[in-house]
Length: 341
Image 1 (cartoon, one colour):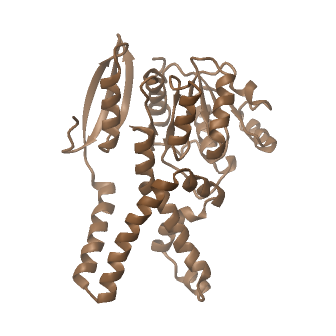
Image 2 (cartoon, rainbow, N blue to C red):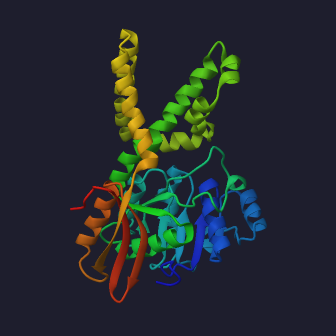
């Protein structure tokens, strides 16, 4: 691999909003040759003012690139993927940053792109939108899901090396369906709950009084409600069945809390709240063990693919991916006392 970036020295970013813009600015700051493209002419002009080439034609922006990040709205990704694939070389790695993975992964397979398209999702964001809100540090250290496929492990390795080296991200390898299931509870349902809480306040008779008293608990719990509603709606609709399933699970816990409160059962109420406290505390208290695993780079990939997917499902991540001397070596981190296999 070249310079720790999998040889992906020439990049393009298609769709330069908050996430795409942050990817673009970080690639620029790292010194990679990067172009940007957005359907909005004003955004293209703003991109050029950031010192990044932004041609008017999508095909010109992606031609000759080693990697293209697709960062437009979720509903546009399958169509944009096909268009970018037609304008790039077969060795060009394609990836996206969308918050749902199954639909775009299926589209890639239908277009025969499984060998070079790696579905991706950096788990980061903000309550603002657009390139003006983007930051080259937004994705620093993020958990960045990459979905390796049976025919695309070479592309996965190259992309993982770049994401780790350039963004210092924790690469979480998962299948597309497993990502969508986990993201429903980790990200998508929280957007619904934040919207519901903020919406209830908006309808409240004492709305202004409530807002004057709102402190950390309200601000933290409703932060993502400040994002663009169209973007959130696309995310929820793109993962609708899984979101509804996990929403039922959250509703069941809410019902238990409400019943304990209604019955004046302090013990039951405390027990349910403590269950949540334990999960919340685990965000900052989990410890990890580090190991390295090596596979032949050119041999049968079934074992490597199974290892990667199992690592992600077990809560693990990668901080190293190197191909040398005919072997690929992963540096992996797994929650303590969670064995693989």
